[in-house]
Length: 403
Image (tube, rainbow, N blue to C red; front, side, top):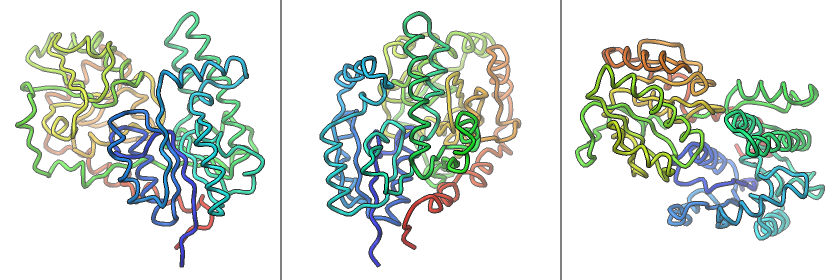
């Protein structure tokens, strides 16, 4: 029997799965392709990703990838101040993609739509598409992220971010009302969204957890770090280093926590591993034994050889893949409380959380003294966060699922 057809809209090409949102969007794509003929519409905002366009044919019947130039998108985003919309909508709007969406739905008689990220819902938020079975994966509550950003700003930017929080939350409610289901990355995030929405919408809001590829992130695999210029004993942070939450995390850690750790253990090094480091991150390189790698082909050697993984995120929503990956590698982890939300693993000799600089440093020092033997972090991930298990509920929210 032929598979039903599904339109999948994604704000960033879901391959390769090398950063937070793309890890989730790719695994969703793999799962959806098992049940549907997938028609994918997405943006590409990184030149590095153009080499992977043809790879999408492994999971998609058809795909439309639009180049997103960030400067142009920022200029487009300014129109929101004239239209009473969140900046996010014009930033991610493309007339050619909108035309492709309409033509694809009509040409192939598509009845099912899966939207990844609230920024892409606008393409099917029209009366002519009201008959479709529409599911939106917000991942986490974007409007709440903007509220957090505002708390860390002042002056004009605080006003801009507060405005985005208010406007985007209005559209999040609109999508929740009009679409069949609204999905989130964790029960915590789904529960918070229910609190923000009218009570009548509660039954539409559900969690589909993130997972981790435990076969790939496996400490028993032979990983050679010989070709990497690693310095002795070190702590590591992984993540896309053009993302503000990650930039803020390493800046705070280097300013307030790292000096306290080095005062006791001056031989330690700190590696910041991730692509597109901002100028603020690059400024940390080479100072006080802090090393910024930039994009790497594989983060596993950096995790495998680390004495400790840190995730001091002060702005965070949902479930942090960087924490799950570290735990899957059975590494000791010290994180902020926000970075541990949704994972809900119990504190142990190998996993701890704090938001206060002195306590964070103290936990790191304690963890460094703790033997690796007996670490249970990988066991927790295997029991709670494998992709087949976390995506199992997804089919219950989709329309016309092929079985």
